[in-house]
Length: 184
Image (cartoon, rainbow, N blue to C red):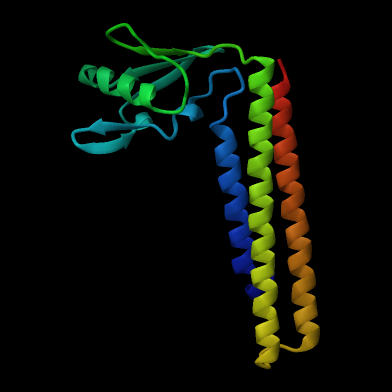
């Protein structure tokens, strides 16, 4: 791999990884602890990730159970979940918090698939922007006589192949997540 291409490949990888992390937080009617990844609890004045203040388990396919390490955190956890965009009302029995995931309606599934496709498109736009930046850099290097015209064409060609690979990966990830959401 050419050193001049490495920086652009890293950027494309980061764009792809960010999209897949987003996809993990989209729930498909099954309990997935990743839906709680963005929730922060006020722990002694510090916003702390939920995973760091308690144990999250999946006792049933459509239920998450949160067991805080300190009982006094129950109210803070419950409040954080209620104010988040998870869209599930927690039930607190005094020692654990349970989140029961309802079955997704057909309409909600279609909305989620639309959202997934939008995120996929945004990622593809980001990847194409990275390709454009790379090509502009190579043109400037050619003008400054740092590389030959053949090298410029070769680098642009390799950048295009890299772009095609990442675009295909994005399409595949969007298709897989959409299929997962639409599967009842």
